[in-house]
Image 1 (cartoon, rainbow, N blue to C red):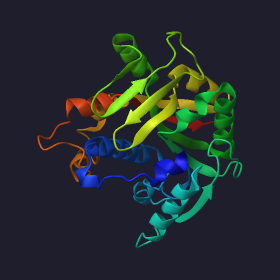
Image 2: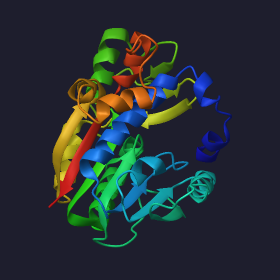
Image 3: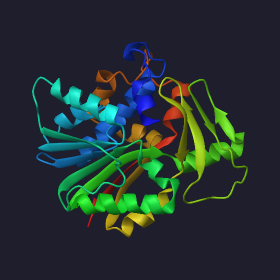
Image 4: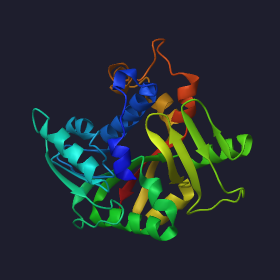
Amino acid sequence: HYDDLTTRTVPPRESSSILHIRTFNNWIKSILIHKYARRGDRVLDLACGRGGDLKKWSFRNISLWVGVDLSAKSVQEATSRYESMRRKPFDAKFRACDAFSVRITPAFFDTVSCQFSLHYAFKSEESARQCMKNISYVMLPGGHFIGTIPNAEEIMIRRKAEGNSFGNEYFKITFADEEEEKKEFGCEYTFNLKEAVESVPEYLVYKETLERIAREEGLELVYWKNFTEMYYDFCAEEPFQSMLTRMNVLNKQGSIDPEDWEVIALYSSFAFKKK
């Protein structure tokens, strides 16, 4: 499944109908990296995919980046992306394995990043707890775990308002289970995003659940905002304001289309600090 995602033909970036959704997501990740990564950090990028965030990390002058992903093809592409960088701003290592069950080196990383992937670990309580245990295991005290995940609260609000299947021309979310009860783990829905994700099973992650199991592993929640809140927090603050233009986040009118907002508002960002 993961290798199928990797080999799917993706339209050229400039012609993509979800261009501004992609660039908005990249803008959010850039803010998290800017806020929490420091010069000289050793970084673990869980579910690193094709290495799309390598350039973002280069701006923070980190010393080491280790990328881990389940898809061997993605890791191969990430390696090629790093090798094609004209100057190597940091050392990089790559591993193809299960990002949520791997234990690399104890108390080694200053920053751990997991972008748009942590929710896959919430298929069961066991896998979610193992994931958080492993993340804490590899982190140095004082280090940060940053990431982005679907906003469970927003998704459930829309489900209650629109039923078990909802979306727009860009995305579709479908719940098979008719029950409205709140399940902390294994609450599955199917997600489709035009040109990017096809009928992938995903799992809701509630803030209080993630915060609780993270705290049990010595990780304290220090930041939690949905993407809409982040936009209004940072759109007028430099260097993030100028990045909106440079990264082509806004449309020709200098704003964000309502249909794009419907997708963007489905996500939240977070940062935890290792005690």
